[in-house]
Length: 431
Ligand code: PYC
Image 1 (tube, helix red, strand yellow):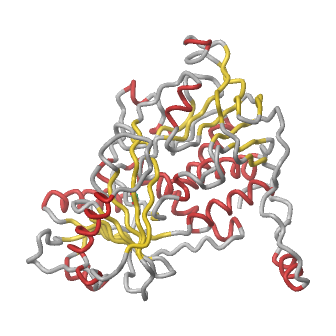
Image 2 (cartoon, rainbow, N blue to C red; image 1 turned 180 degrees about the horizontal axis):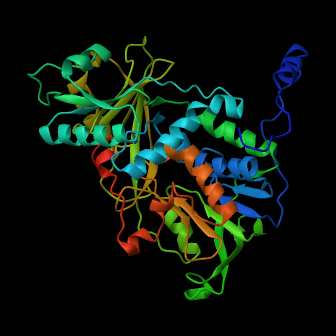
Image 3 (cartoon, protein in one colour; image 1 turned 135 degrees about the vertical axis):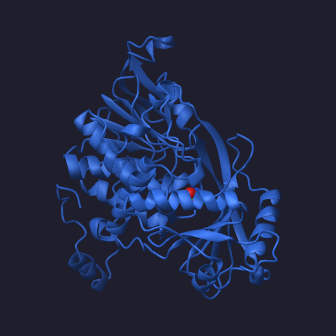
């Protein structure tokens, strides 16, 4: 919970009283009036945007905020990911950052007064080659140095933890070991969106859905139309009208570079779709999250019994989110290498989201050369697990006007200064 308490609108007694009197449930957040002026506009109603709004209000007392989203809350990457959380990264900067996110996820049900169903079930990254094993050892050592519970385990230990995996030596891609990370797991992604949305709304933050940003208003910049470096942001033009604000935060995924272009800020991002799929539900048999970088697949079982699968991003940069048969065929082949016993299970559906990839696989966070215009973008395939810490740190950045230590390594200026934070080796799968 932040330092400032929201009004006690959702007390357990109040909800019980409604239930007993068979009153209809209150709407979880308001449909606010569209105002023409705010202190802060946040673009993107996913976990990152909502968490930033929530922490601005709860930790810094800034509540005159509009969150705008062209669709409904959680309609982008927040509702399309495979809900995996972990902090077993490769760089010391990445480990510290994602570990703070895990801390916030751990206390989230209490903090937001909503059961977000965090399942700390352990996370296995399988190694099928000597070089993969070397990377797992490297990650384990970096992790241990920072107090993160991570170690490399043997095929026999893997089998004990997850009996459905085929760890025999005569497979096409034998499992040589795995990075085992007990604090990793899954969390209900929709609940995280709803929790932050409800929390922010309770502080008076206005959540404007179906409100598309058409332009970002900047004055005095050195680029075309007075935008770009040395300029000052003055607000946004939306499909519902203009909003004047001295601070605009781009918390989008998929369209992050296009939105930043509207302010005259160029980002080193290419956008690729990432597909995922889910099976019919079966009795629980998969106790851990399993990732295979070499086979480009990750899998976990939901509390409903479905297997959720993901893969690497599609090879072509595009905004097209159609599912492909190619993905399904490759996924099925690879999963069956790992778990031959599930060959009779049927896939129920598949979907895709958009991933904004940066050259070093780390995000871009903090101020930009346009005064008052901030970014929290470039999440690649790591966005959901970073949601809480990004919100917390971006809120501090905006409120205090200085970049917090935890996100300083991820500033946009690193691409001109040559101080990249190479996090590709921590990707769940190859990209
Ligand atoms: O990095 O753990 C990960 C991940 C899972 C799904 C997409 N990325």
